[in-house]
Length: 115
Length: 117
Image (cartoon, rainbow over all chains, first blue to last red; front, side, top):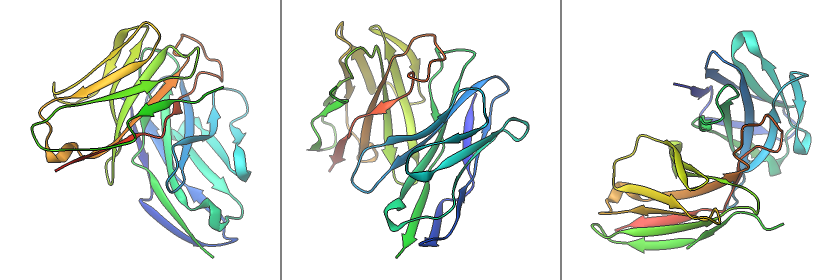
């Protein structure tokens, strides 16, 4: 079965600091990868996705993620965080070999950005 | 176009009661998935429906059930509620077909927050 792990449960940064949130998945086949964000009081929304091609994908609000197939990783990065990035971030994976399989989410990483 | 709509947004029940939650997907989306979100547990997959058929099921007891109607709207039901069922129940829709299209991603609703007393 697929599983997703996220390296940090809670990350605290000051504004302008750089961010990297780790995500690893366990699945031997071809996958689609996602990062979702949940701002306080808001619903989950898609931050970025990787389906194929360039392993460095760019999303909304200056976020990017790099797919490293050999490491089964899909880490999220942002060079300079803002207070408004305070949110919970979820990594997710879905098999491309079998679209009958569901999405699997990681446990989430809570990011707190101090002004 | 309208997003994923979940009703009710908030509800309070007592142990032993049952509850039905509703989800209207984005127009044209044929897949509806349900997740339970609790602090510390993240998003736990409940089940997915595609074209009125349950396609996948998570590791939840039989008290949790769902269905999908011909218009793709979905309902989930929890019977004999327990305190531990208190959670945010999220519905997400997607195209659901066998495609690698970038459009085939989950779009979430705002959730139904259930409190069991």
